[in-house]
Image (cartoon, rainbow, N blue to C red):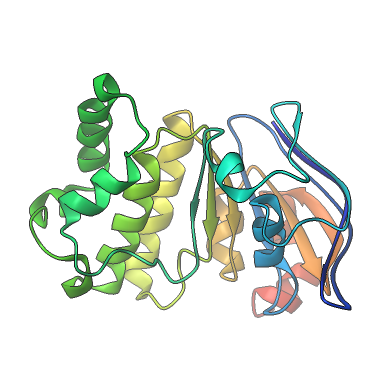
Length: 233
């Protein structure tokens, strides 16, 4: 479904990604783990067209994305939940979700809204509440729900557990697992390696802009080097 082939990216004269090769197959949860500054978020941003890849190929459903504008890429059944959630703080839950479904066919809009509210009962309870008055966990649910309103085939999640309490993190990862059952392919960038690897079909480790290890989630979860570096031994 999604292939990064020898992708290199620069910020000015600084190279952030070095010939990265990553594949996301349809129906999978694939996670990218690594320390802060490893280039994880940069890979997602490069996929979305900002910054553009300096070299290499990014193909989605067989179509080359390198060189396309971000707005064009986001119209291809791809949705992104950025780091930091970024909900519309002055809009209600209902209005935030409606913004996410702006390009959804009218016939599918209410059906998708019902699906999102079923997946996130808390959002139904907070339907008329302004996004900026919600807790961090509720805002993360809203950010994911807003992305799902566009009926994506591929969902990009950038650090969804950041700043959340452990009990909320577990809820978020349970929901991500449910998305796979619902047919949504997920590409997950996450610093919480333990949670990410538990739900991932496959995973990649990124260090200093380079893929240094890959395997199934289970393989990396039990790998001694991964455990020492990212799982506290």
